[in-house]
Image 1 (cartoon, chains in turn green, red):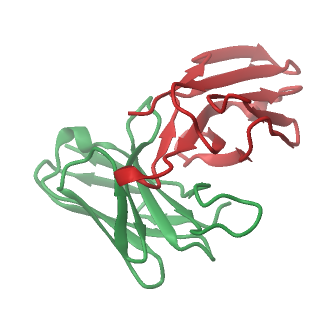
Image 2 (cartoon, one colour):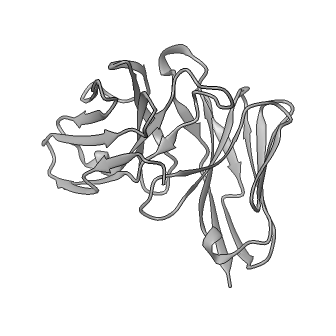
Image 3 (cartoon, one colour):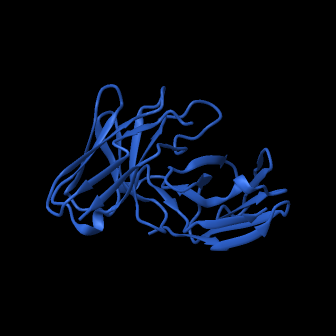
Length: 118
Length: 114
């Protein structure tokens, strides 16, 4: 187990609603990244948070937003849900900068939140 | 943007056989990561590679960081039923607006018949 936890495990919403997903990073990690994984695809990068600020962003619209808290946990918020937002949402934590023996890019994933939009 | 091409897309093998899969990119990566994902779970890191030419093992798994820094290989020896899952290669962006982004390959689906 990585120590990265996510809640809830499953969620059903209807189109147009808003959703908040939560992530607790692995102990000792200070950076959280969020990914969307559609069925049969590899994870797609949404954004990364470091020092409570967005540190990098993928090709996702502004209705995908996030927060990072002083304890390094994070939230992903999605407004105006669309059917195509149905996916597994993964949170990954990492340490930046890296300590000896590893790179800061090495990310450890949580179990994910399965979101279904009807 | 960066793309990783992973092959094969799927493999059906008998227990005890060895498995090889690879990942190629048109761009250079400074780190290569290999993950395994089982149904309903998040990807689990198997091996991380940080230097060109590096060969690293984790039990029956061995991965290599290609010398050109544009490819990587993962081998599984003496496969067992619990090796079933989807194997992903991934590489991080070094900077720019997508800092922190891991680009993933399409995955290799491994099925092991007892």
